[in-house]
Image (cartoon, rainbow, N blue to C red):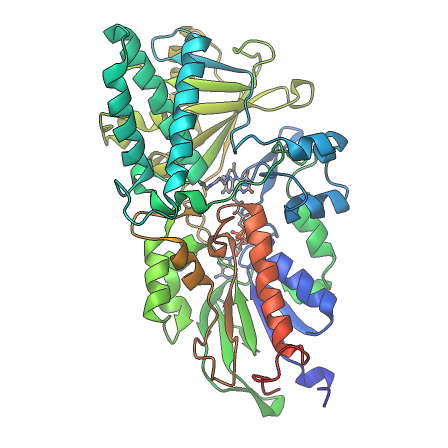
Length: 509
Ligand code: 6YU
């Protein structure tokens, strides 16, 4: 018997990032769930996709590129359908380029001694690092890994290589310093404090799609905005942080006397929502901090363990706007090499004195005719979290000193503006993105993605479903991973109610 409108299953989606929006859009377009609600803690859609203005132009505080813009990438497809991309980004040629996640840009590398480093030496070090990093992806199906982490593997290999270097001591030292820069850059890519925290075995499971990474000319935020506008206005509720999700219950609404719901969601402002199904898309960082009180009864031990073991680190951006460029014309990437550092010597832990050393790469926003002279620096890890505690003025002073030192120009004019992200302090994010940490594996990602209740014999299936970038085994840490995870959970619900597919466990309406 077809259930009437009121009796149709109620679905709540928590979080209006790409996972939540993707899930809501798919469920809405199926028309199977007229009682769909999306609750978002903050006042905007997009989550870690967050375009803001710097002067007159849009900059990205969160996701920057479409990684691997090609036909398999749903973000690319959707953005193209919405007309949000440039012609060049959509060309077949662009879609076929394989860069292995690291596009080569015209660059300059400054040393802490105030010199520009030899491009040949830098290219040599970059190639070596890239070869070694490729090797780390080959341990996926190996039973016994030689060392637990990507960082330790890289150091072990570099230690071997150094023995064969025939250079003078000074050149050896500079080579190691350049390699250390790539360790820090890789921390930004993986969203971790140290590559020693990133598990070696599962590292190769992260999958790169073909295509030359591209950006959104009018801002990444255009994509969540387009998805949002496809949803009924009343279905999305902003400024509605959820405090607790009670499941496995039997909750009744005064207005629906005969009907009970297995889930009750209570918001921080005390408002309650009853539901048959809840799709949780809150970031892993939020779950790490709150899962014990966020979900009641508590998560099964395997799931709680996955939340604890998986990594979720910080990568922030610092935008600096200059009156005049100090970098050469055409340069798109600036690297900072601290000559007294080496990946083979553990860095000091004095955050206050040294935090800015972790910021090793700046991209030059393109094209300069549009952006003016704006650099976007990336900084990961504890130093990045420390940076969040400083004022804009303190960040500006520290980075002016760094740039003066790198360029050897003590009179270089300071940037005229600074703008930075603070993802670790953001209460509903608590970091930037996930990685597979030492002690965890892709199985933890799958465990996190498993819906509740776990018991397939329970008649009230799929009370709580989990989406979000950290639940995608091969595309974690990306926007396409987030969107695909939202679609996956929407499809899971749709197939539950698709009588042609699920005769055995038809839920009670
Ligand atoms: C990508 C890129 N990129 C830079 C930086 C960051 C990220 N990513 P959301 O958090 O979006 O949504 C959850 C919502 O839930 C949110 O709105 C909350 O407010 C809400 N919420 C929380 N608690 C709640 C509560 N209690 N009640 C109600 N609501 C609540 N990805 O593809 N390209 O260039 C970058 C970058 C600085 C911070 C990125 C990039 C990551 C993506 O932004 C991110 O995965 C998705 O947006 C997450 O969407 P979501 O819906 O899951 O959560 C080998 C190997 C290496 C692996 N790494 C490879 C590198 C890939 C990452 N690249 C990063 C690079 C940059 C620059």
